[in-house]
Length: 560
Image (spheres, rainbow, N blue to C red):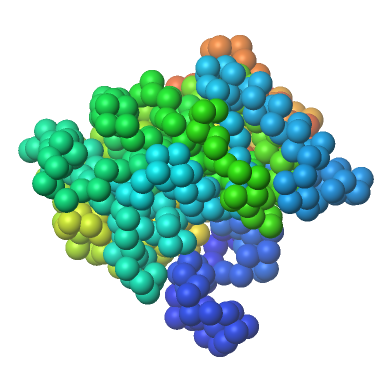
């Protein structure tokens, strides 16, 4: 397990003089807390220049829902480039753009009964938000936009004007005007009726509120702290917008592309926004790309009235098209994301039951967060983990005396086998990142049976409520596994083969760098094509005792 072990390097060590600290701007952020220089990536893994591997719960801030270098997307991209196809095209018609638009219509819009025109703004999330705000104002002939408390919509001036974070707003250097914040769902903890203030100021000509052109909302606020809007709240907001002649803009930059389960995060509410913004994982591979979707009657742009030099990023069109083909040709990914989200919620329920006065949780799909009643406790957890033998990277942030560690960064698999959104990005006002780049200490126990061997690694001593096993399976072998009396097992697979669920009879492909959640008491048959190496993480049982063998704790039973 040397590839998962690192020296006790802290942030200050990494920030010693280097080309990054001496030449790159002080504005750099994430690199200050991650003591590594990354070089390669595959699936759910980042690999630094020394060859150390890191399980990536960050996932490109939500731009890598399908993982790093997905083999099918990578091959499509390589083929496109090596065959000499066009890369930069502004808004000219290209084969790649046409194929993407057709696929998007056939597999995303039409199955959901949606009729949207598609605009390609500049290739980032803030670009599509700027286009949406400009379009709403142009259509309605009004300046004012309504946003919500703790919202985040981007870092350019228009997007910042509808963002709540005071630190980010302060970077603008000028007044941010023509936007009015309203309370997000449950902002007053249920004390005030939904939209009471909003309705009052809209109806009162003496309120001083300029009639808005539109309302921009996130169905789940990621940056703002995993704040979840209820479906009924979203439906009421849509109704309010219709009654008061305001356009409804849903910012799905971070929550779209399956982060909450469905392709669009608003599908659960049964609403049809007037304008939708998409970016991040729409490109499929992490390449810059953004879309602004609008109802056809709202497409009142004049030619070139809103443009961007890099709106025609054809390699991104290629990977976007193949990502939709791979992951959205059926509903497998959506169902599995919801199932895994429910699994996380169940585990959070157990944790919160142990500390009912200190912890609660919230989320949707694979966007989940723990809420600390006392924000200082989150900071204390962070300090203890950094100081201890199992040092990770916990990033606590606060709002209103609370903080939440978000536990939603896992990645998508192909549609033939469910995976985990890498998602949606636990940064901002109520989130915490936990990376498994910890130093591993303890006792190794080696066991061999049949064609496989495994080594037990104790993380931080036996007091920790889970254990790691590194398992290697020979090529060309058939192995039966039973997870005895354990809540879950997470496999991080390298190599190729298949996994047969013996209960359902469904066979799934195993691919390099993929994460799998397997529940306790499940039985599987693993057939290897090449040698496979896996990191198995075992949680203790909810009831009963663990199954031991002569070598100690060992929850696998293997039959050749």
